[in-house]
Image 1: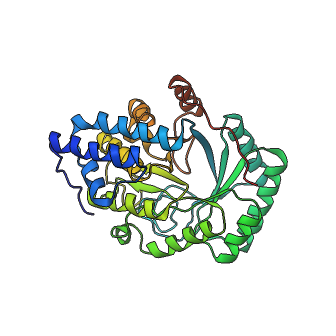
Image 2: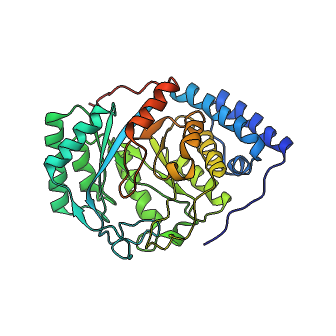
Length: 344
């Protein structure tokens, strides 16, 4: 794995790039380019509060004050044939996650519990390369049952799709599809070898063309350089997804990245500011790893530094913060939870 760049921008230059960002991003709504994002990621510690404040202003101006809350649940956990080096659900690694299927009544119950937290989105996830006919049929049945009993938007994350599968999900009323790029194109072969960056990008483009919202996330702290982190933010900005979940590596036992270590919290805050300044109008969602990387204080700082969506409760294979902790924090910070708006 490559090591991260440690150079930090001197104080004077730091505030110069923030002045540029204020005019370019806040006033004109034009995201920073890749080279400018490197400068944000290299900011000195002293400049972090100013960067977070600017990112917060950008979020309020271009996205509004509402915070979107989402719950996720896995319909099929473990046993995935892909070799994503960060993922304990791969069947190729000696990790403790075992293959489990969730039945439909449990799925409906989970959707109800998610809606009860105030969440507007419920995401059904399966650890697969892509769905087969059996899984697609199960997804259709699950969508129908949830829609009968719960007023919540349904999202899916089922791996790489064919055009027919994209069309089916759109027809069934899937509101949003999640398919992460994870890391920069230049670093992708370092963390995945069983499929390509381009294959992921193809699915993302088909989802957008079908009219579903695209949720396309990042996983940072895998050993990529700051330059590659900026590359990823710029590539996501070019893709123009509706939402970007921002994950921080939580090294899992038995995976090739188990000894990578936890990302520094200040680097995580720099990344939050950079991703917001790259994508001023995008939903930027707190996702996996924030509990370890940022803790309670950092979580608060991120919400005041460009984040405008949160996954509440647990993740796919790791524990998150209690939903009540995040919801109470949103109340304390006077951040209204977005009301449900069904996509017709």
